[in-house]
Image (cartoon, rainbow, N blue to C red; front, side, top):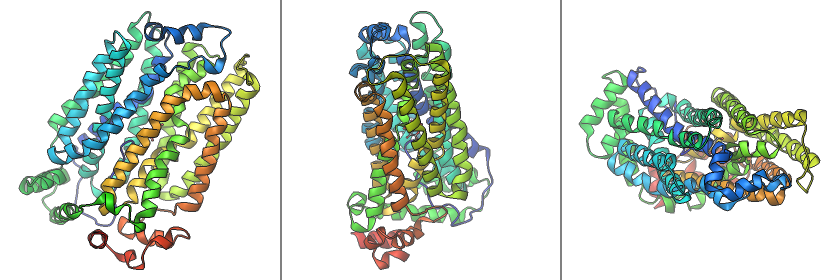
Length: 514
Ligand code: BGC
């Protein structure tokens, strides 16, 4: 899930609750939060492969694209073109750093509203763009919107959800992101067939739809009980909890929320805490998991599948269709993770998914290498091109049930309260930074590394699979309070965990930390 969830130990307590309509409405709004991110991820690749768009803003790339003698690997190589895609992620990185303060001080809903609002303005800039500056300003505004939404929507959802459904909500957010990607590829498929400039304008402008939905949602929806308590409205918080849980008997959960709020007020130095040796496993995991997630190379497919397919010699329409197919496969396979992650565990999915991605990447690299060679000239037959699309689908499926959702779930479920905010911020920013780098560098890397680029990502998949095998203990069904026991028993991390930490709660650890 983009932005990550603060998973709070489901199953430790069994509070009273009914599944009320209010909770379902929050699910729906949550889905729009994921959609706006997914829509961005999915729309830019298709748009950058549309000829009228390239002709209007990047005539130099368009000329190269049309040149029959051009090296296939370098057809789309342009820093300015990639900046169109990547600028959004720098803005998202920056805004996610200060969005947490706005979310805390003004409540989740105003942060969501602000996210929707900047996103709306961004989509207008893009839809009516007359020059590259307008395009980039639009993308940056969209990025701010994504940063705010990714920060506030998951927090909102996890606080509204009944505690034992938090895990499902977490993966549900990733499903929503991929759904956004699929919607974007379908829209691109149709708009690409329109004549003139109208097609890409519709594709970019339609981002305003989820933006309006999230703005309206933020205005209608109530604040979460946690946020009300945090801002001193305890009475209102209790009433709210009763109404969303559909029962008056909420005393136990309410008391826990008050306690949690008190405890979190005492957490003064999450950034200092996380640097202490006993949090070394969490620090390393929250840096490396998002880094590795991006180094799987998934966003090469997310952003540039249509461009990649054109590079393989597909026509514009066939490229967009193939991108749509890979998106749908990714969506379906994400459900596999939703239903198996708590049964088979994280490690099995990480390791199986890694091996599947590795084999398909090597096969893709080898096939492209054989067909286009180092010179990047040549033709690929229909059968071979279809085989490459099939291999890409196998690769995407492997990612969808492993590094996709787990890349967000694991960092959020291993961090205890005294370091949670710092861990979340590190996780989101590292992810956004490497998303930016891949988006910015991919087309140049393809031009220079040629088919070797697939081996480059395959190399990292080997490293990350070994990393998981050796360094990540199974965290399935482990309550956060018990997590230290798991690290302590681990062959490597055990040495960092003091014996007394094994049975300590957040407050005690916090006191020890300061
Ligand atoms: C990743 C994104 C990726 C998306 C869809 C998310 O988990 O963080 O970078 O685009 O999955 O594949």
